[in-house]
Image (cartoon, rainbow, N blue to C red; front, side):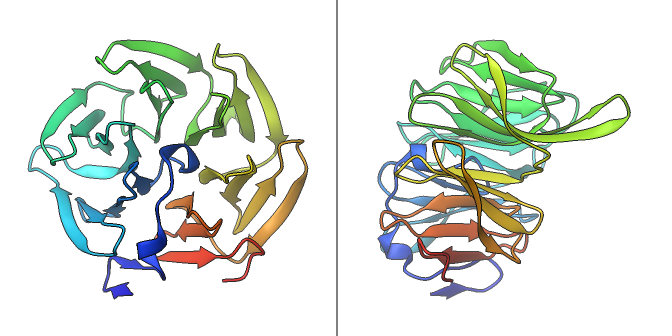
Amino acid sequence: MRFPNVLAVACLAAMQVPISACASSLLAFDHSGNLFFEGRNTGTIFKFAPDGSRSTFATGATDVAINGDLAVDATGNVFACANFTTILKYTPDGTKSIFAMGVGKYWPDALAVDAAGNLFISAENTIFKFTPDGTESTFATGVEAYALAFDRSGNLFACDAHGENGHLVSALVKFTPGGIKSIVVADLQGYALAFDSLGNLFVSGAGSIFKLTPDGSKSTFVTGIEASGGLAFDPAGNLLVCDGNNKISKFAANGTK
């Protein structure tokens, strides 16, 4: 199945994965198995039903242009990063509203929704937390997270790359639900995160996708691919990889493309 300039992926009809299995990225799934895909630099969110049929879910407005990251909550609301420090919210029927404004100074970097429906937003060396009713608080500071993902225990993982004493510090970090931070892997610059059904964490960075088991063992899953647009798993355990050119590739559990 191929959609010119938008999406290239095999067996789209088989994709039905829970939200907890998907990282915040240009890709996000709802609980009905619909795939939401934000075409980079297009200002459009496309929706792919489980049978592979495509529709336009939302388009950018003249005042607010969609800029990248997506997240979907348990009730099917879609959240999108937009220009001018704005987070947009779309109900399942596509109705748009502004969920939050003034998040950071420039563009938010990453979004993720926890099991309780709280939205976490990374911007300007800070991770903000928004409750479903829009109440804002600061969850963590001193972290420039370019990707966020929750594990099944509610721990938040982040690809961190921030300046410190004139140097770039890159690491995969973990926050407990209470906000306690620890470093999972040092010297790792990542662009996307996703958990599989076994709790293994997959990290895209430096032209490779790395696999981290729950006990912390690290291995290289595939090389020669830059998944700057996101990672997600289908029910069969295949890894979907979105690059920066609006293309999605599929890898089997053994790394075969």
